[in-house]
Amino acid sequence: MSSLAPYSVGTCLTSLQPQKLNHLNSLTTTCSVQVQQQPPVLVQKDNQLKRREAIGLSLSFGLLHSLLQPIIPTATAAEAVPCQLTVAPSGLSYCDKVVGYGPQAVKGQLIKAHYVGRLENGKVFDSSYNRGKPLTFRVGVGEVIKGWDVGILGDDGIPPMLTGGKRTLKLPPEFGYGSRGAGCKGGSCVIPPDAVLLFDVEFVGKA
Image 1 (spheres, one colour):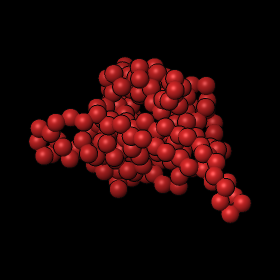
Image 2 (cartoon, helix red, strand yellow):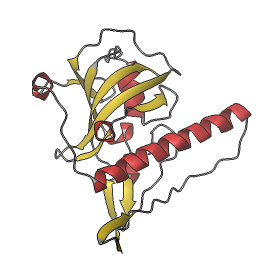
Image 3 (cartoon, helix red, strand yellow):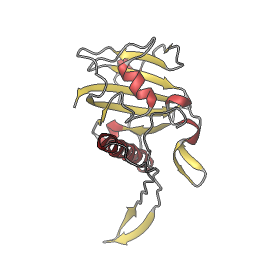
């Protein structure tokens, strides 16, 4: 990620190897995570790096999961209605499908959020709903891509999300995975380089 949140994202390499076991076919999936190591400066910084690696690994497994299982849409009739995106000065766009009812997140707070990630062509590349568990991370400290931190906490022209809120975010490449993409293997990427991403984010609340 060029100007993205500075955390290391693992790359899942998926190989499907049919094996016969009790007359059933099983699939063996391997996932290698390459993490760019940085020398620790402070104990606190080293702990934060480990946390970022864990988040990167979690997102990588999410991408892998999306390759192996079909995406099941999970939206109510109200949420299915397209909403009008508002473009902020930064270039990030947002639209609130549901305005929350609870407190907003605070920078550095551990929160939970559900999401569905799509490419501009509408292809879903990841969904926490499919895994049945929201993503847990510290918001605003670079544990996730920049577009998530800004889209949840708010910024110039973007109001903060409230607990229970559901928001669509349209992220330019510099707010997503930049020129390197994500989930790349053999010249093919789950998220292509310089991709514009769409996320439907549900702010579940404090973890």
